[in-house]
Image 1 (cartoon, rainbow, N blue to C red):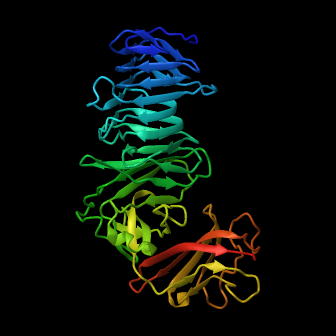
Image 2 (cartoon, rainbow, N blue to C red):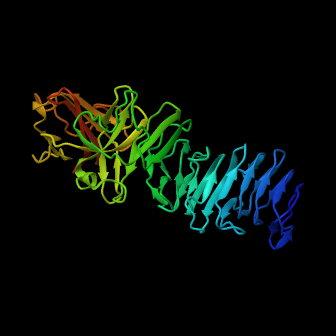
Image 3 (tube, rainbow, N blue to C red):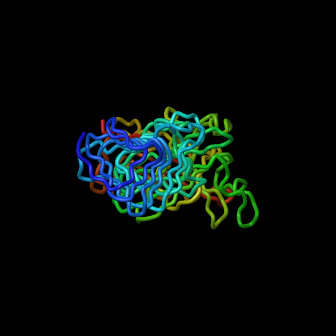
Length: 423
């Protein structure tokens, strides 16, 4: 066993087979778990206000965990720095409570409680993850206890499912793309419904996400159900499940991906996946706005074709049929086939606008009054991109967004994939 320094009352602690006491662990000084060292607390662990717990090894917590002091790891260390919240050893019929007045900072966390409780963990305070949160087994409930799970820059969540996720808010910091491990618990059943965001342009960004298997706005300020007010060509929204996404810090925006599942998403929506879209509640206009949607049926996800310009409450929607027929291939190679982006009937629609974006959400083309007087997209950029204006765009997948005014003067949006090839 490697050396460690501590000034604590040791009760119920195991260091590589060494046993100290039988009741609980109270740290009132310095407890340093060195690399390649195992630390276990069978009963409740209490890190007092003057306590300093540093984990550079592998630490097991089989019961409640309270932190009113400093819980951290050596950022420059090379040890495991793994913290495991495992099964409640002495009373498996109770959840593990994670409490305290201070943020607990962990490098890697593994949730692995196989008690079968729903939820398994109560998160009352802030928990910060620097590397990875492994949801092997157990639902973390912070929704009912005021806690917050924070993922630092480059941190990730893995192995989420209906029995292992976060019921409550998740905050992501930094400039990397992230799959939020969010879900909800209803009547003793868990439902994992991820929401993913694309990478912001700089590290100085915070986004917070939550999933509701419920309506977070039962009524609007006017006393009307927000599920009743639908704009544009939205025919129906998912009235059972919603996500909230807020931008807490930063100026850049993200592309949003939401998930669907037959056990929660109404079949009336999923039976027509080609019409699936993402809608946002406009709290000023008191109406659901269609943001468009790129559907991946294999992964059961819907993605906004461009970055968001506002945040709040989101859900899935079904858009009605329109007169447009989109041919989503462009190969301007002179063979007379697919020489331009063809959108049949668009020139008959009022105030039409066409935008093309690359896979990073950067606009490479935009025009109004499409398909009039030869005004069409032939694969050349006229926007900010990695190639010069009017230069042919590289082969790859792009996204289009077509918008126009319908007969009721409502703005309608249609979006999808566009493939460009130079061959």
